[in-house]
Length: 299
Length: 299
Image 1: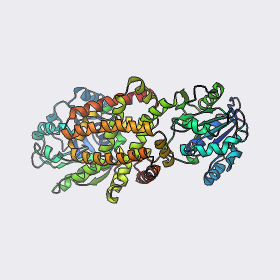
Image 2: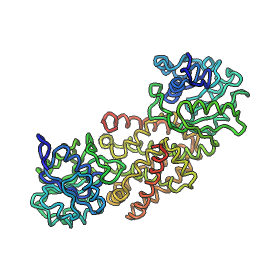
Image 3: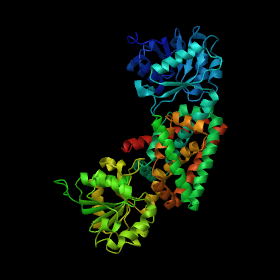
């Protein structure tokens, strides 16, 4: 398949390893914007692979990871963090010289180390994380516009291959994203606040409802249009992906939970004491953050 | 002003006391659906009242609460819970025989008692709570469709005037809502879970970000499209209204905070121990609740 006329091709053959919600969005967007010459996909789930063939969003869907990456000049891993080691071992020996290896994982700590163990020298690794996604999973949930106007953070090592970083950046920019480069540690700290804690809290609050008696649970669902339903959307996200996020970014997540718990305890105390001033004061200050989010066009 | 042709008028003159986001939506929807003969508004804030006159959404905007309710056959209080006592004292002596008094407050505990102290006999009180609203405040934020397809819960006393309950129900149904009748205690318990806890959590998590250093705060805003921004929307809700909710529904809210904290502690422990099974198991179960919300058409 040839790319759209007039678009610069970034990679001649892109292999998408793991083609669920994010992977299939990468495939769709890369093709729609003419960023790749050929698209090959691999997934360990046979049903997913069969569905990808039906959807016709890649040129080839390979059950064998080695066959999927053979001849590719870029491999993008779009699978849960816990599978990275096995994936690296399966594809490592089959990566051609100069092939760029990247990913979309939500935690960057350890990615370079885990992939580096099985990826031979001369195949530059450029870890990445698009800040995009919905609560839906699977290849049907992907769409071309997912990355449009959203940030993609890259965390290349200090001695990274500059050309490889530039090509991965070009891929994301071509799909409509804005690219930011930062250190692994900083990424994991910022994301613990903006993403990991909110998801954990949403899972917790919806989990509290799961454990209610059946009658009350049905009422909570019926009357959810009052705050609760927004949490149910977040708490419908991919369970395996999020399990791996919390296990991988453990230290940063535990630290923000600690801070959050302290702040919640302070509000709990204000409610118990009838201290309306403390409550109103905080509730006013949080509005400014919302204003910031709207101004930053992230609302 | 006459109502739209062919619509049944529920009240000849509706007085909206407190005309911000909810009050102005009631005025707009009641007029659009031809449910009231005449619309009068009062607000303690002169600027709000001036704006309501400019918007032309009521027939009269009165700075004097007594003048606003004079001759009305229904008064709907759409002001923060903490103002109910003062409002009742100001309007009580001016309510004509048979005038129906209702409200839209998010907590039903105490409403009957506080209003009952100053509202004379023969003016039936039918407390109500539309489960609708956005994070925006003020009369400009109101719109006709706010209550469409949303629940409105009424908590009339056991010996309530049946005709008054039927008329208030007709008003909400006429504005597109579904009406449910329940006890005050049950309402406050269900709403503590579906609404009050989610708002408190959102305020807490966004408050945690408020206290970050300026650089990190700007990054949290920039990269908020990953869970955090949904919380900023909820945490932009009316500060005074929510202060009063937490102070009024104190016992039920403290109980659900306690349950939430226990559940969060269990997840925190699972993360610390690297117990992926516990995490994945919960993250799978919360998906069912989302499915329920979607099936109940509350998503």
